[in-house]
Image 1 (cartoon, rainbow over the protein chains, first blue to last red):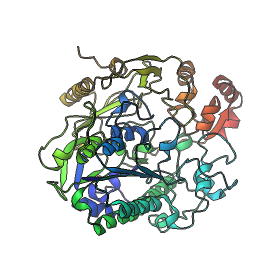
Image 2 (tube, rainbow over the protein chains, first blue to last red):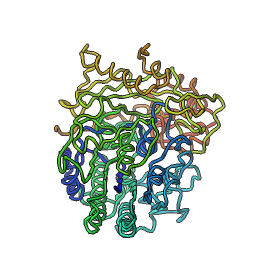
Image 3 (spheres, rainbow over the protein chains, first blue to last red):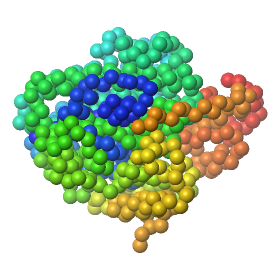
Image 4 (cartoon, each protein chain N blue to C red):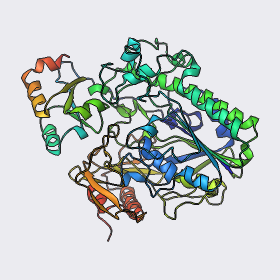
Length: 505
Length: 89
């Protein structure tokens, strides 16, 4: 069996027709729709470790890392998906414009493929250094304040990277999905293959060409007063403050970009049709997380409660032996499960202990339930649990440090600059899923809310009514579920202290 | 499914002192404590997407204006001494 895995970054579930599209912008996604008509649609799928690279550690190594570690590399004791696929006799290829794979401290995610193609230039990708003075209107729209500042992660990088873009085909999704379609054309004759297509779009900057830029707005898409790369945070204060007009424009550009992604995704689906690859290929389309676009008063992936906007994610799986072709599955599933799903489809051997559980028995109709809980969060912050009916968002104590466990010294909170030496580190066999010694070092905890938040997401999908603190039996049950999950995972003792939970004896 | 909630519409007056934002990684635990107890409108973020400045040394955002200096204390003192400058960037 071949595997095609497509991750569309920051793909908001609530913008998709297949999930009811309960937003004012009716984005046409005919290609996602036609895939969903053939595949299984998962209604209760959750992100795990956030944001980008932690999600990829889950996809590609099966480790739910946020309880032990922040954004960082693969570990020597991980068996990456491409490595497992190689051992199972598959030719492996990564096609991505996700520049984080190539930054400080996040190595190991592309090296095991037989081939990788990196579409250059998205967001802060350190690619072009000219023109010295890019388009001033675009600089204003992307909030690049000082184009000549030489520090890390200057937004001018994006304006320089796209300075020569004149046609739709110059942009990222067209290049990426075009390359994926071409790869299928040239490689489908291999006995077994794994193709990972990791699209940075729909991620910001929400800068896209016509006709998409004007598809959902009457504004001038190049009006320098209209931001297409807003800062993360509250829309009513600080640097992330935006007017209602600006929020509406951001949403329109996000929607336009999503329409563009869908158009070019269609090229890949066309190629699967033309080459008749459906009968021996498992195909997964998903995302790493959502993106706030004004919901609850937030923008981006900010220090907000981990609402479902960010964490309740779309997932579609095509498998030729599926029992639910074109149907929906309500069982609770988690991003970390995709690793075991893909390795099982490839008949690849994996480590005895991972946090991943294959979804194929569910897809084939062999079982009707999959997991009792899904955990999600950022390292060092709140820990959140769902049973698919309720979500319990647990605050953390800021006076109890969080600890990083890993073989590399990395910056737990400051991911995009050179790693700093961790002089307080100690070494030992601290991890329950490997006997490899690792470093252990502390950093600050930060909460996202002061008190627990409990939502009945079946009755209240936008999580408007906090049910915590009312003595409900469901709160006690969800609290116990969280403890059970932490116990199952054998998380470090300090996690119980951070979350003010009693550690089971 | 119900329609999404609208963005909160809390509007601040231009006469209000601007919020002071800082990055978690850019402050010591002691500075973090003092900023939180300073009586100002303070926003602590895990990352303000100002990585170059954060890597370079202490900085704060006053509203949207970036200020850098030898220490956070020195910057706060400068803000206190010239509030009108920071109120109208």
